[in-house]
Image (cartoon, rainbow, N blue to C red; front, side):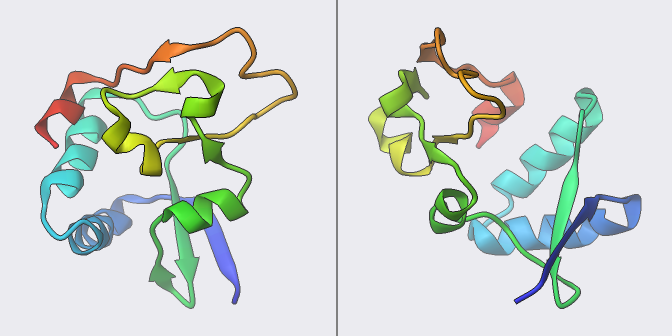
Length: 112
């Protein structure tokens, strides 16, 4: 299985919307991505392709990629019901040390 990761391009947006809509069984997350594009400057926005097909993250994928559940690191999001899908990754040794508490997202996330 070969996965290519590249910068997303305007031509990807309709397909990204479709992938999110399918993966989350509805348009809420796809609309969130569009809302964030409209109001926030992304530092990075990537697309992963496998055989020219878009792929989306899953907890199993995140773990294979070095992500770990956030709660054991003291990082929380709204309620424990989000724990199975709330992950962090260390970008540098010690990067998570000294940080704890509730993670607050932009208000656009409240619509999801």
